[in-house]
Amino acid sequence: MTDIASIHDKFLRAILADREVARDYFRSCLPLQVAELMDFSTLTQLSDSYVSKALRQTFSDVVYACQTKDHTTQVRISLLLEHKSKPDKFTPVQLLSYIASGHLRQVAQDRQLTPIIPILLYHGSQPWKYRTLVTLFKALKEELRPFVPDYDYVYHDLGEIPDEDLMRLENKFLQASLLALKYSQLKKELVAWIPTILSLAMTTQQTLQSNLIIYTFGVSGLSEQEIGRIIEDVPVNLKTNVMNTLDIFVEKGKKIGLEEGRLEGRLEGRLEGITKGRLEKTEKAVRNMI
Image (cartoon, rainbow, N blue to C red; front, side, top):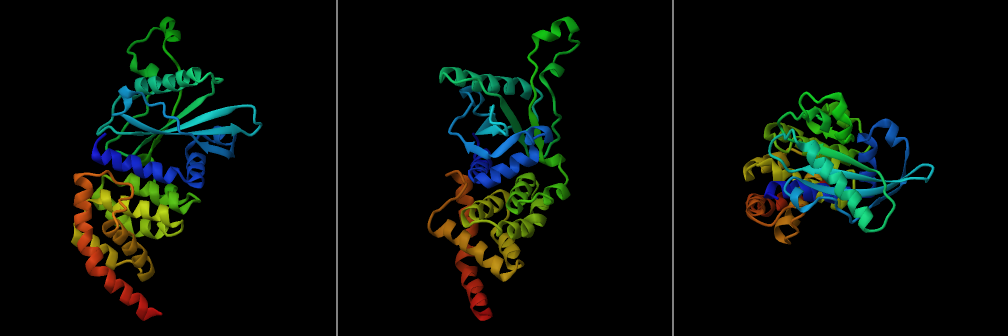
């Protein structure tokens, strides 16, 4: 997995480890008839992964179990984050392998087979068309169609979702996280959204705030001076939270959501001057307000 893919992966795992965030995300992206079937109070994250060795460079997954409202059926809801640099029309073949791997895991553990609902989350900058497996076969004769596996998956392309729809989500931290993911590869657009993302991040608990702040600046590609200008323009109380988070990241080595290596080193270098030079100024401003 590349450094940048690892950053996205760790950030997504960190925020989905929060059960409330995971619940609200699944409610928002599952088909309505499926979401209404689920008893989300039973939602439980599993340690399982159905990503085979062959697919590790392509996907990472987070797997949840959830009961239906009548408690007669348990399903697996798998969020898959793609690691491809560009769209791949053969993704349905890889998803078929993923689903089969999940069911084989259930068989090996002597469990009753349970449905697996794959959610493919895509946040790349290039358009990616939703395809089913059968569409990949050219001029498929009707007599041969029964021999092609038929399955569905949820395709969640953040680039195709209007910002207004994301901002209508009830969970404000989820709004901020999806906006950060959506624009993670579009620097100009991300910069414009950073003040909103930071403001929305403050509506949740500290650990989630820190993950989002570090992720957003980590993928922004901004220089120290650019980060400093953005932080200077946000409200003082928000500025203090952001600065404290960045200070912890640099001074105490709490490298939240980032892969150890060159990318992390570059970010730490960009932030060090800001946290050392500007934190005292921010704290002084806060004291003067009290």
